[in-house]
Length: 264
Image (cartoon, rainbow, N blue to C red; front, side):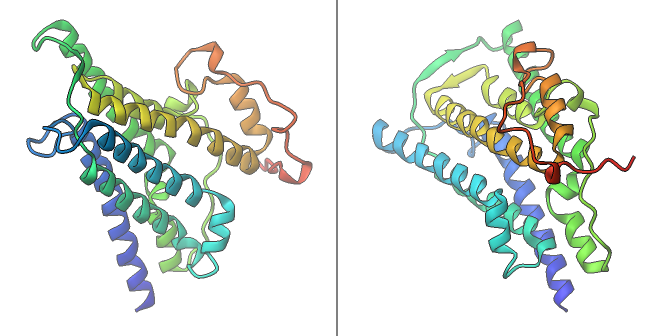
């Protein structure tokens, strides 16, 4: 019965986490009438902007804190370690739904591309390419591990969980964070950039850049010199951009104990 409950919990967490991402795509692109990011302002510009920034900050703090090893160590005192990822996915999905539900329209236009023009179709092409890269990147990594289902399967079937190995495949040959790159394309390439849209794009871009910093520290801790060399050779976000490569610093170099043994 306990394992059945764990299975149902992981499935619900997965549905909410992935559902929040699909809703975000539709919301940002105004793809579904009635739930798009743009609308008539319901409050003053300053309080609306402050509310939106607070929502982004809430999502960022939740995401960054819960992704840290210290928090995971604390959480797994009460939650089975193989269910920790599902807790993270569920909480992130609910927080993201809250952000989308409470987001306040601000009105105003930054730019608007004429419908039917070449630039209009270029914007929408890059918009959909961005989201396609984001979603497909999760499968390159291991979609079901990223969203906690693989861990729960191991827990339910009493199979040992083996962490993912460091591999450089597909998009990861050209940039270190294709999932975030796809998000940025989807956020910024719109034929109609309103102040409302700009606030979300700028806020979440700031979150992404901060999240990358923390994430790379965790990756160095987990994979050691493998990731340090990969980071040195591969751009962070923009493919083929030499300036996105990062030289290792003295703080990056792990101790001997931190470097995983390559048994290949």
